[in-house]
Length: 160
Length: 285
Image (cartoon, rainbow over all chains, first blue to last red; front, side, top):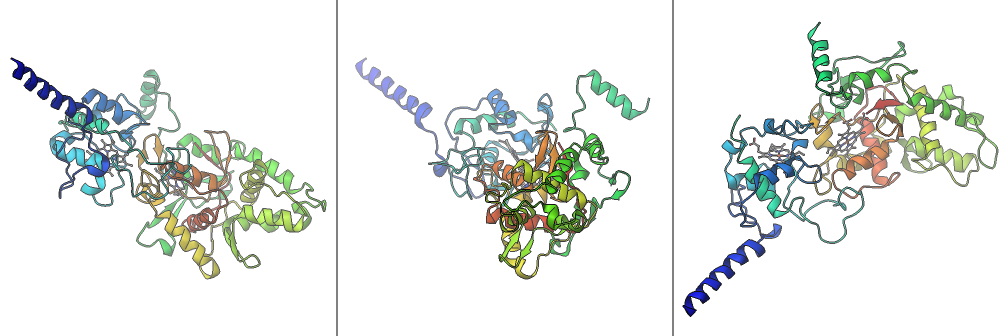
């Protein structure tokens, strides 16, 4: 009885650890030779509803500034700089989508698409949109869980 | 009912106000201002752009029908009110010596200014913008201790006046000779991917002109129409202020108005418009 409790506690301890603390930092992300990121950035399943919000909100992903998405027609003003994301969940798997969003340049060399999970290597980085120099360490454009949520949303876009 | 007006009726019924920022422009239209000044809004790119773009377009081409129309007639162009103010300033005495611009210049002698600036100034060994030239006149000829700020209202008004008298002239800034080094710095800046979004001028204005980015219809970022009257802020906007806005939007630390970098960039971007006509003050959304 006593031992069982200990085992249970140990198990709970481990799982609590994975849900809270194991965010992979931008510098620790492992990108494979295809530009994919196999491992989840947080270990927490993405929430597609929240992913949709990230995609359409200016201060977050603002993905529709460059991409058209038929399923997001209710949100005005889709851009034409990138390809339509219709069917993207059928073209790419989770690891590929995570890789594209975290750092599209690893998948498409020289891409105009911003790298959403990166904190260094910039020329004259600013303090958000103030035009002033950034002070201190930069935050990535999107948080790790935002990226997981966007991946989950994109995986729902299986129709062309 | 033709299809176009039918669509318009449906759009109104759906409550989709025909906002100027979403309606597509007529990209094939020609611009003749006041039925008399014939503008070159599209033409073969200058030789130095070989391999980059083959045709250059005025920003006017990418604006909505309504905005395009406003620029075609001085009575509809709100920028012309500032031109009038600029003309008054041109004739107003300023500084210790009681002189006005008109004491030294007939405005008719200045019709070529907008089309050929920025240009090399041998005396000061630097490339000067029109604003820098005005400030030089103010301090060195007119005894003004405090010349106008580059982005001040008075400066915008007088540069709008100087642009307006040069309308229709073909832009032809020199990029060789002593200005060449500055021009090269400007080109380097144009292709640098700035800020946390890592975007260069070229990413938007060379690779994506004609495409929408969110609600905006991207132009080639030409400066032949400056200063521009923007409906968004209902006033004149200077070239380097526009540069500052675009750099800021890449989440970058911008350069200052009047900085060596922006002067170089202004020369370079002006040269990408060699062959278009001076249109300032133009109307933009």
